[in-house]
Image (cartoon, rainbow, N blue to C red; front, side):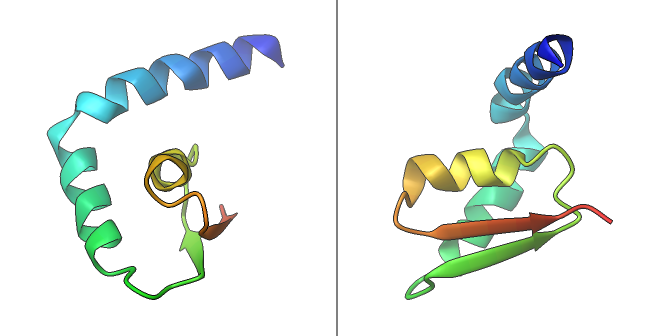
Length: 66
C-alpha cells in the first residue's frame, strides 16, 4: 500500500504542472460558486479533490470511480 501512495504522490506532483489538468481544474473551479458539495464521477486517482482541498477546504468532495 505504501508503494501505491508514493506513486500517487509523484503523479500528483507531475499533474499539478500539466497544462490539461490545470485548465480542467480551473474550469471546474470557476463553476463552483455557491456550491457546498461536489461529486466527481470518473475521478481516477482523485487529483481534482486535492486541487479543490487547497482552494475550497469548505467544499465537501465525493468521488466515484466506476
